[in-house]
Image (cartoon, rainbow, N blue to C red; front, side, top):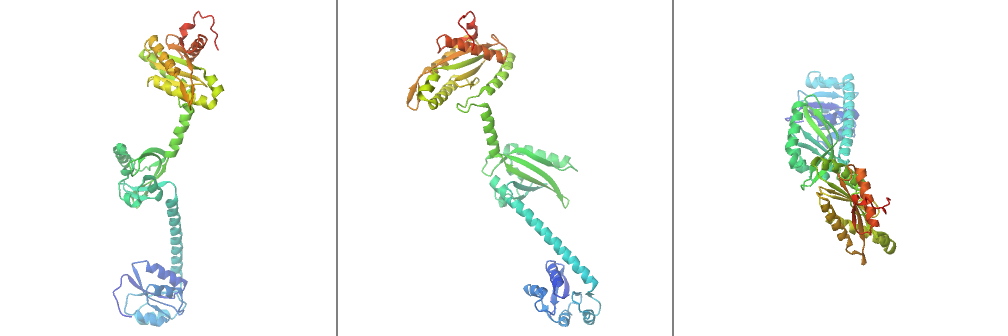
Length: 428
């Protein structure tokens, strides 16, 4: 063998069975060692096969292999064979004892096998972890103490609309809406400087994020901190909750709005009235509660059918919303019953004017898919604080006044004060 400049300490392996093969595998991956030859009496020994693959000289004669390495005086010989003559041959060639054999090699071989098993288990665990990270539905983002993105799994790519190549090395600020980036920087800086010895732990924290196209969307964030090699890293698990938020909004809307007309329902009306009365008292203004019942609605339902009745209610709702002010409220509280809150009405005359506008608006014919119908409206009015000072009393008084309007010829309005002295009045 011609002496060559090599990198790493020269090594000769005698015995290319399972132990020699494992030792060769380890040394191939180590820059501190260079195997300059390997030998085994079996031409097909696994170590020899591996050596030929990597261009390492392979011998079937031990003495020939030892003599081939004589130009490397620092060569260490690992004897994994059962040939006791190897030590003598090495001593004759190199002049001193450079052989690791017997119990030393057995122990060394066991150490190698343990290392290989540990490495295999570690690689398997890493592979499983990478598979989970790659396939999990939640975005997993790793950043360092400076805020630079070091990891960005496929789910994060899909959520934010960035490829991994686009974000690696970028500051995590790009995932946060511009309006709150300064606040984010201040929070991170405060944590890094004041939370020494503590580790961040967020679970299910809802924040707004921004996609690559500038779209804002809600996410649920869980974050944790880890330290490796004295450096701090932060792992964020991000879940896009846009669909969940839309579903929650829809459920909340259904709980407070009428499904047919999309007007506030009885529950929202009562809640709004409970908040409106203290405001009226604080600012010293009058508030009117009106109760409206349609005249002729039952006839439409009976003659044209319930589908036509539904169309009529929707048409009525649109007209009512057009008549009242934005600061007022109209709600559907029953089949053909509607209630109103009119804030800061001033005088009773102003309230009467609004009631007349409602009656006029509803007196115009309705087109129900080619079928025309006409209806009217009977309205009862109660005034805060003149008639009552609480929610229940105002609603009851408006209802009673509406019944008086019904018995007075319909398609008109009545104030609660009009009930006094009316002998024909009978509450519902």
